[in-house]
Amino acid sequence: MLPMQCPHFDAGRCGSCALIRTPYSQQLADKVTHAQGLLAEYPDVEWLPATPSAEHAFRNKAKMVVTGTAEDPVLGILDAQQNGIDLHDCPLYNEPMHYLLEAITAFITRANVQPYELKTKRGELKYVLVTQSPDDEYMVRFVSRSQEPVTRLRKHLPEFLESHPQVAVFSVNIQPEHKAILEGDHEIILTEQHTLTMRVNDIPLHLRPQSFFQTNTDIAAALYDQARQWIAHERPAHLWDLFCGVGGFALHLSPFADRVTGIEISEDAIASANLTAETLGITNLRFDALDATAFSREHSGTQGEGGPDMIVVNPPRRGIGQELAEFLEASPAHTVVYSSCNAVTLAKDLAHMPSLRPVAARVLDMFPHTSHYEVIVLLKRAA
Image (cartoon, rainbow, N blue to C red):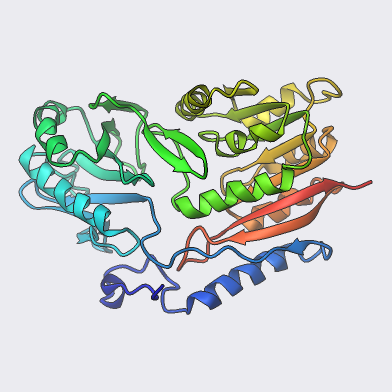
């Protein structure tokens, strides 16, 4: 595949892909070196070959700031003076996404939705969030300051959906605060369909508007498959998937475990995970909307029947933290799979569970042209 070319970066309009001028092979090698350096005190780790990404058109989600006017809306980012920069044709997205983002600007005009202006605190539409499935279906979310434009959006939506039937879910999120917060708690879904199906490997994951999903579908598939390869031959009696999101790891691993418990604080994500389990007829899975650390605290000291003998953790960038790491250290689990989007916090967490030793690891490039990456590590209980 050809290296990514970006006219926005070349013109100085956008610097998000800070490493775009570094050859991709070097980007990947540097990420491996960084991860290995952070885990240098574990010299026996088997480092599997890094998993590369496509260099462009790999993102499944567009997060666009809306500026301009209802007559001439702009989807993109803000410059230093808080003016909008049009990025609807960003090469991180594929051409069908470019086409849909352009169509959305016309829909904003048709529905007469005024973009929110930071300087005056006037207007309504703050962000447009678009997620693309592997089947080229879409979830479109408008983030608005209030419900003021909902009636007009509802009126003009049928015409938009008729012209763009690939849009499966359309919603309006209400975020009234004048703060750098992407979305609020209240979601108004305007389509009959409420979930977007993200087919990953052989699992049709269901994504609701406020559910988290990895931004690089191909790398997410590789991530789940790596965990599946590691545990397929172990047959755990009870596997916990903490920070399970929409159930990606749990659903991939359920055929190889007697019982699986998935824990995630987001009720929307748990509803999505349960829908997939029901759709597939999986009966050895239980998902609960709980805080992972609080859940582990309640089960502290659990041994034997009911206690996990294998645990998967997939935390946000802050990591699992000392309390949860110490629970893993004291737990009956003989195997832990730790999927991390921040190897710095991964290394800190490992220091709190010294008897769980890394034996294998792989870097997966979820975020090309940036310094960020995913690393998945297999931990085994020391004898």
